[in-house]
Image 1: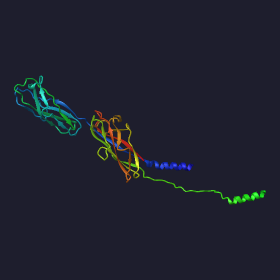
Image 2: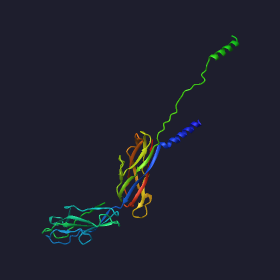
Image 3: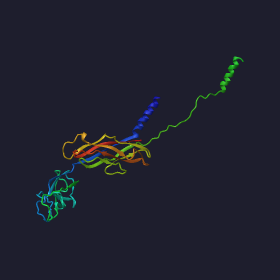
Image 4: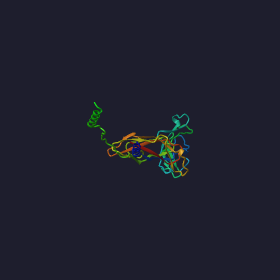
Length: 153
Length: 162
């Protein structure tokens, strides 16, 4: 009987390791900095008389009194792309936004200091656009309209 | 009848009687030896690059090797079925191994959990060559908005049994 028990024990030991096996792998993830964009300055078309011709503010390569500028921060070295508003989307309005209280803004252009985030985690974006000609009966006053710039990796 | 006659009769009876004192039959000892089961990692589970605050990401096991799923090769007895045991939830966590900002690494509690491990079938069959490749996927949790940037890694174990 003892021999039988011993035999069973040996069989049990011999087969145990053959019945199961395991392997280890890694799960990997790289976390990069979130992309942020902050407005530094607005697009300023200045002062113009009724009936004035269309005016274009160039995107430019540095901050000036007219162009809009944004600070983009994110993962150093990472490429980014910028989307500006399509034509027919942005209007500056005054009063109750009647027919002579609107000025369309189109042809948005963007100029990135670099197409990738700098080593310091930042890059600058400058934006220009063209406002329509003003009508002869354009209501005098201050006009404002919002536009959104989107940046993605 | 005299006692002598009984005695003679007894001896005669004993002489005729041939008792069965032993018998035998044969049996076989049977043992089938099968190949050991073994498992080897082919590729890791790669969640790639994600921004801080990114939503939870699931890698499907898929049926072929790709750049995300983990894969393992199983070797053993031809045409034999085997079971696959994957990690339970709340047991695997990727922790930061490099910090791209150069700052201190976050403690383990701030690692990235990996749960819901999946494979195509919990029971599979070794092929006629005694091999099978299995693919494993899982879900990593949503990243914190201020999750430390850098590389994260965590180990997980896959068991196979006949």
